[in-house]
Image (cartoon, rainbow, N blue to C red; front, side):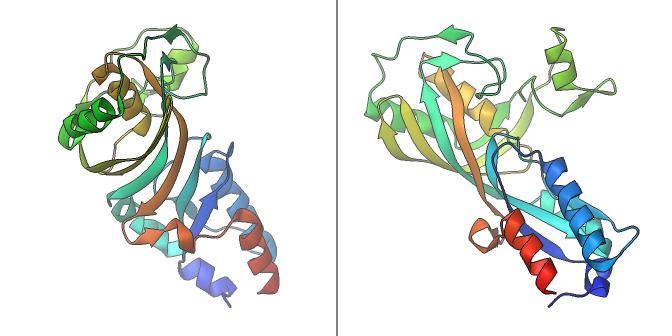
Length: 231
């Protein structure tokens, strides 16, 4: 069982983030619960890589002195599974915003879908979504987007080492991706739609691995709180 000193000296916690929670909310919740459980006035808690509210899966949470390792964990290879839905796009590249365009899909075969994934293997140039937390001129990109302001976004080089189609159910394509730090799976979905001469959005996303950390070893928020009460 972990003690107050264990959390203060530093722990790496694996949490399975639920749907509709921000990563910031998870960090705040865990910090509050740890403080309450051990009567701690102040403790550092941070996460090693944001997940969007509509995504679920692995969050690596660091406490105490282990927060110094956050940058190391953030730089590690990540694995995601999810669903790309063909035939429409949204400004956010996922279901956070309303569909703004629809596209023909009759020309898309399963063979074409599998063939198109090869275009995205290796180093690729990718534009982050305008609905993202990246900063430009001191403001988050999503602040410009929500205000209806145009903003110039520069492309970045990311590496996709694996892009596997695991199931095709009409317009819904299930996938698994292994990629470098800084890769936006929402942008990958949007670019994949363009490469198919259609449109696409990310309708489901789950982070399954960060380096050697696996979501199968992660606790739900509820289970983590239960573990605190037993300590």
